Structures are given as C-alpha cells and as structure tokens.
Image (cartoon, rainbow, N blue to C red; front, side, top):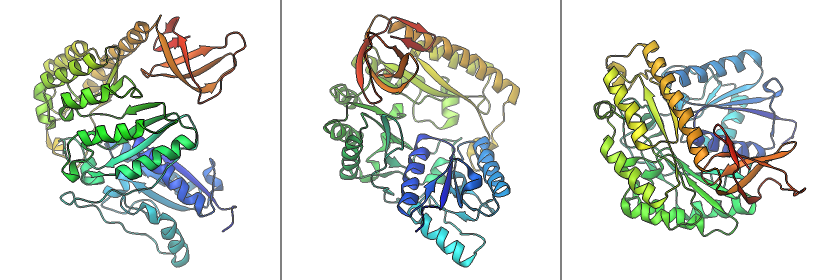
Length: 432
C-alpha cells in the first residue's frame, strides 16, 4: 500500500480514549498510512468520540460534521463512546463500535469498495460480560510517560453516568499481556507508566478476584527493568482495602500521588448519585493513604449543581474538601445525560452550578499552590520531559510541574530522572 495515503486523528475525552487512539494509529501505520495534522490533506479522518457529558456528545458531533464539510472526499470514521451510544445516524461514513476497533482498516476498505452509506454497529449488552478487547502493545508517539490500559467497562451504574452503557461491564486484561507491554514500553525508553482503565480498581472483578489482583499487576510492572515510576489512575474509595494500601506502600516505584474519586462531599448528594461510599468512608481511606504516604498529593473530581443540590449541600462539599486536605480538584458543572436516572431529577439552574464551580476552582488553585509550597526545600526526583531555553520541565514523583534551571552547564535530555532541591514555587509550579 502507498505511504501517500494520510490519516487524521481527533480525540475527545479521557486518557483511555487517548490510549485507544494511539492503538488505532498503529493499525493505520501498519496498513501503510501516514498521519497528518491537517485534515484537509487526509484520505481518512478518525474522530474518537466521548459521551461522558451532553457537552462531550455535542463536541463529538460538531467535529464530525465539520470534517465532513471541510473534506467531503475523505472517509469520515466515528469511534468511541458517543458513536457507540448513538441511536440515530451519526455524521460519519463509518461507525466503529467499541468492540470492533481492530477491524477499522477492513471497514474502510469495504466502504470504499462498496460505497456503502453507513457501517452499522452493535451496542454492547450491559448485562453481559465481555472479554477484554486487547490492543497488544501500544506505544505513545512522544513523551517519557506512557499510559497503559489494563481494564475496560464499569459495573457501578452511578445515576448520572452513561459510561457503563457505552463501555459495557468490567473486562480485565491478562497479566501476561500487561507485563509484555510494560517490557516493550521500557525498551522504547519510557520511564514512567500510568496504569489506567475505565474503573481501574475493578480490575479482576470479572474473574471473581478482589483488588489484590490490581496489586499483583502493579508488582509485575515494578519488576520490569527500565521502568522507574508507576502511577495509578483514578481510584474508587469503596474499593480500597487496608491490605491493598499496605501493599502499594511497599512498591518503591509507586509515586505518592493519588486521584481518589469524590464527586460530592455531601452524603445526601452521594446517595442520589448512587455512589458506593459516604464522606466518612472517604475520609477513612484518605487517612490510611496518608499514613502510608505522608507527603502524597491527593486530587479528585467534583460535580457541581447535581440535580437537587441545595446551598446547604454545596457548603457541605466545600467544608469536606478542606477537611480532606485535597491538593487539587477537577471541577465540572453537572450536565444532563439522557438515558440516566439523574436526567429525570429536579435540575439546578445553570448559573447556580457555574457559581459553585468557580468557588471550588478558586479553592483548588489555593490548595494546589499550598501543596507546591509544602515541597519547597525538599529534594525531589524529576522526570525530564521538555527542554526550554534555560530550563527543563517535568513532573516530580508527587505530580507537581517542576522547572529545573540549568546549572554549571549540566545538560539533561527527555527521559532523564534527576534529583534536585525545590527552592521556591510560582503558584502550582515548583522552581529548582
């Protein structure tokens, strides 16, 4: 096949989507395609869609329509969660289901040969368990840190979330496949692996295993020579056990940075959300983590303006984030998602939700700067990622962006891990 054929990728949504785009990119490369950043020059345009919110849905459709308009001769392909959930006609020539991504090249060739208007997909049955859809080894095209997907699907069915319907039930990757990818990533020069999934703490549940199976995966990755650092993606508080926390504390390569999902600090809101924990359980997990990792950075997600959220419930959330000592908060206004239970609940006015978002964002900025300041004077291990005119950038183990200024003509390169002392902070950025 000629290398003159070009493919353009556009990705919306989470880290898992980015990982799957990287995997799909490798399929196109193997088929003789060359990637382009200019969609007007592409013979194929692939949009990896997201449906986590109504806004993500809108942006996915908007991008597909724009590409169809700007490059009518290209084959427009929709993949990802928004296309998976679409009941009507998606604005694309080909729609690839989440379970059929490996067949994307074949679908394109069949479309071009038959000029079929649409390729249909089948939505996964949420009551049915599926095997893990394994892409094999996926190597990101750039960077010193690599995301590794070990799990797909979710069994939680929170009242606001459509993802279990788009992704299906929990499906876990084999430990052998995970270990093989870790070795390949190390051989490609990656020093840090971020272990990810739709609900990473559910790893092994589909095989009747507990969270200790995730501990086994982390130990497997830690055994790979060349991998120096490991991070865990977003964790569910209700899944964590004291045994698991003790186990990860014994892994020297594990970074002291944890994203512990919250969504609300109000117990009544958490109940309406159908979350599997309350505020007291969350605080207990934070206490156990902080005992094991005294200097850890703790981040979370919070939804503002969830249906029925009162001023008092929002104040409970505000007080809770202070009590928990959160270092950074990713804040989102609630977005109605049709097909979920929350869509039929009494809605909070958008301007009220926006005000609450701004209040929490202000708190998050102060908390993030305060956490960075707490590391000033400490020796930090920094993984160099980029080189600027007179300094290098990278993240320390605690996941704080760090600027390392050149001293005594010492040169570094991306992928180097160096130990430096933080001398000051500029807001959330550490200066070394």
